[in-house]
Length: 66
Image 1 (tube, one colour):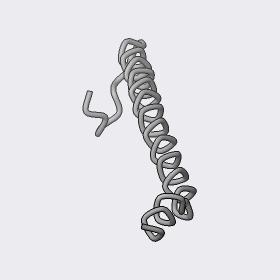
Image 2: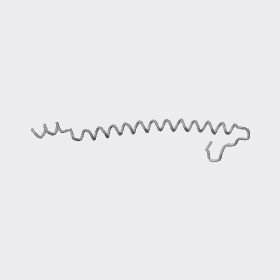
Image 3: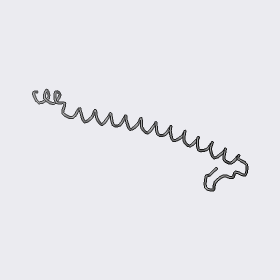
Image 4: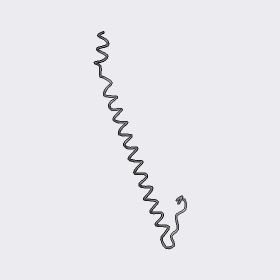
């Protein structure tokens, strides 16, 4: 019975689990943020390429996919 009480009272591994959960949440937030930023940057470059194509004598650079 005493060993069960000691097992329940032992919290030596709790800190590691908390840090692992925190690191996972931070990683998840970073991935979500970078995904949104990447999408925004892609849209900005698309607009720049579109405007360059509209310029007098403007041609799109090769290999842009646009």
